[in-house]
Image (cartoon, rainbow, N blue to C red):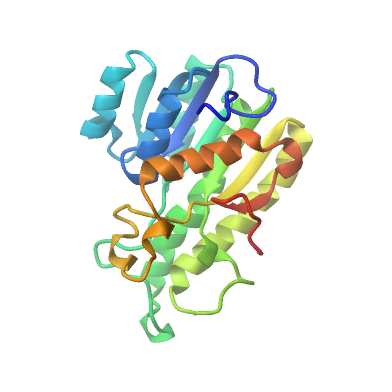
Length: 260
């Protein structure tokens, strides 16, 4: 991170950070980049199967004692509370939280092309991780975010913009990201009253070459398809340059605001 020596604005000491969705894709790339940052003293890497991740094991071996893996289902409120308790027993506070977990497709789940394909079960599944999990994570971690400079960044998506929706389709994914935006924007307002040095950001990483986007890359120009490491660098640069005045913004990978 040579262009951004500080991890986040106003932070002048070592930082404890947490990344969700850390076992693959953008989350894994962000975890690796943070471990390489001289200001980061520890990274808690959260995923459903973090302890069994060979990639996280490799990163942990390269950074002895600095990477802590946590197996957590982000849709389970009790699991989030247990995560917060475990963190509080190790650290007085967190300087950075990056929520990189999300779902677009999977076993029995595909983005809808028509309203005829919309099903309640799919809506609930997608909303649980994309919309509800980020704000429930913020609630659980709030006691660790009330002192000093801190950033809570959650990955959103341009397709979650209501104003930018010109193609339709992808009902569950679009709506879940729009819901996340509103929930986190509301959290940003409340958090500013509890910690004037806090900054909550919603970030659009662009189209990144990961398993999430793989089935939908056909028409993406090569110059607009980012490797995870590049995406991580771009997002961390935005996080590093943001100030509390930016809290609540919805920002694309290039630093431009996205309409709600």
